[in-house]
Image 1 (cartoon, rainbow, N blue to C red):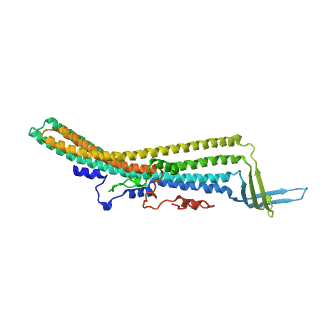
Image 2: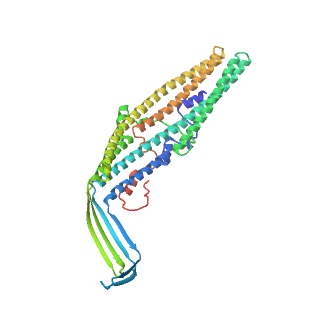
Image 3: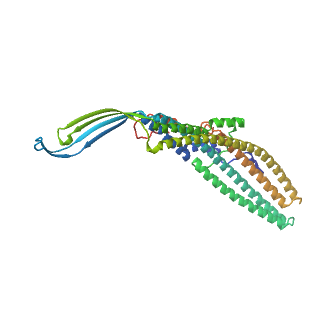
Amino acid sequence: MRLAALRWAGAILLAASPCAAETMSGALARAYVGNPDLNQTRAGVRATDENLPRATSRWRPNVRATGDFGYNYLDLHAGRVGGLDQRAGTLPRSVGLQVSQRLFDGQITLNGVRQAESNILGARETLRETELNVLQTGANAYMNVLLAIAILDLRKNNITVLEQQLRQTRDRFDVGEVTRTDVAQAQSQLATGRSDYFRAQADLQTAIAAYRQVIGVEPTKLEPARSIEHLLPRSLDKAVDLALYEHPRIQAALHAVDAAELQVKVVEGELYPSVNLVGSVEQNFAQQGFPRWRQFNTTILGQVSVPIYQNGGETYARVRQAKESFGQTRLQADQRRDEVRAAVVSSWGQLETARAVIQSSRAAVKAAEIALEGIREEAKVGQRTTFDVLFAQQTLLDARVRLVTAQRDQVVASYAVMASIGRLSAANLALDVERYDPTIHFDQVKDQWIGLRTPDGR
């Protein structure tokens, strides 16, 4: 029992050969590459990138070609008036080309382009937050598996000790040193220990399932993981300042504020005049039923449209609505700041608590070991009962469970602090992966005028 205690009290370990062991960095790299939530968010960012060429398309000309072909039968008899008779079937046809260019639209296009850019930047910040959430969840899953295995090992070792204790109690009962009550107490404690062991097995299966969901593969052999406190700010105040400046949730909210403000200008632009330039060319053949009839027509027009009152005032309602939405997004940004600040303070407190609990748990384990050894020796000479031995054994087991739990909590809390300040990323963790760059796809599509193929900017 003591050897097992020393093995688990020092660190949360998994008995495995080092050559085949998975590390925290390796597991998080798997999650970074293959996590479905992260990959679907990346796809969402690529879809958002297309809003920019959609917005800039309003600056580009519209070109439309037309053509028609048919059959016409004409039976014309002018009589005494003109003496003109015509009876013939013809194939009328025409081809045309029309080009229109928007010259002024009340700054709708300009503000729409700026709005698309703000939305793209906001989507990138959402991607950053998804990345840190996935990495944090992956770290939690990794440590939960290690903790579940550690507790399962402790529970298993406890059953071995309790079985030995039951045999000793029965031997002492056979020679009359203890009563049947002592035997029943030992049996009860062993049954409870086995129940705890089965519960620990279920907890391990749950932890493995969560690991598989986040990392993408089931855990086999995991190495111990260390806290990343060396990457954290040295004080809570600095952590809060960094979070308020860098956290992607706040940055995304600020970009949403910009987009909402521009939406007001986009809708207001519908109340301004618009100016378009339209040019067309058309060639007609065999028109009006005359086989030799040809007509060529070209036109260049400047069109000015001045809205006076349209859609029953619906545009004005949308302007007011956009202004209210703008105010709402500003309040949401303030709310995001409060959320981030609270998360930093909470995770920082959890980290400090885990440190303190580790120190106290180590002292508790050491004291419980000494107490158990003394009580066992006293029980041999009849100064302690079987209940005293079993109680001391349970106290030591609980102390060891608290210690390995606190060790897990310290690692998890360090990742939580890193996430709460917005710096938990593959780059800052130096993960051995090819990092996803959202600007690659953006650069591929931002100036595209035509094309149906989706660029592989991944």
